[in-house]
Image (tube, rainbow, N blue to C red; front, side, top):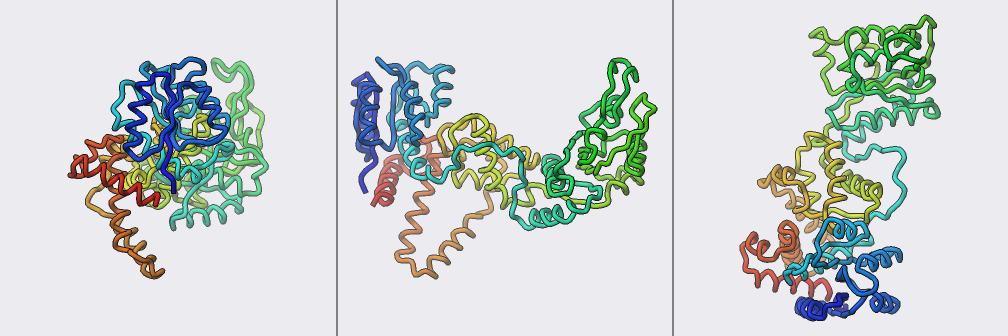
Length: 466
């Protein structure tokens, strides 16, 4: 296998010479260009594995070059260099799809490490999710036993048409369950209306639910149809039902019992055929005992109950959820797709996630925008996630045991040597990732010398290319 190639575009000859020499010492083949135009011509005959480009050059700029290459749909990782590091330039570089940004003057070790990271991620580029339309309907994701049971319950409950109560901690995805119940029900072609009762001031909640007539109260200048009227024939989802005032619980009970109501300030009896799905993170039985929730309303709502498990109880789903949210966030923001390194996914899986799926989604949205490069490592994760990771539980040993067992069954050769080589490769790469590519810090963290680390990285790369 031929050695990886790095192309360098810079009108400053000294930068080209020094950077090219450092790349050759690291085992790369190099090619130099004085401007963007000459490189674009060269792309007709071949494409490098990694490209370094200056921003300000005679003729087309580095940002122009980024745009030209991006329009050709190539996955070439591009590292942008500039002595003029400002928000506008760096933001423009990342917006155009730059792999990373290297401010001048730069440390040669940092430049080499960037190239190595870019090459490693380019190898797995084919497995990245491609840009596509954002799903119009968010979906429930999970393959753990608790989620499979939830899916079965949704299938049974959806067709019944009966009222349902969804319970679970904040952020577990109770509204997604409600939408799935509607989508799989005979009412699927009708409207789905959602209302968070905790988000509406108590004095306005009655009007939101049942509507009002013009002049019913100050500011009511025209008739307003409430959520029950809007949901006629379909499904009404009442989130955080446990926060509903007791006075309104009485009115809601009448609607559930008779299917009819009056608008606020009105005399016309309104009838609505609505399936009500309620959700709460609270213990409604405890609220009944304290007099904060009507027991008869609980019985009306709790005809069928579905429990959504917290994320910490279905950790096996976390990697798939994280990759899904990261891909969706990249698409929505118009960014190039990214992926998580295996070590980063391991950290995500071990975190307690007090905010559940919603917290995971928000973290992935943040990483899609702020993480440099196309692979997200442990060092890119928020500090609170890394602090929470238990260090006393070597979960990786189970995966290693599975791999050894499979290799032994398939009569794999040189198993000991291959396992040690792979262990060392992962150890070195993760140490570099956690330390943002700084070899000195990575070597110190591993307890080895910098020269030892550099030599082992070189040996690892030769084994991979051999």
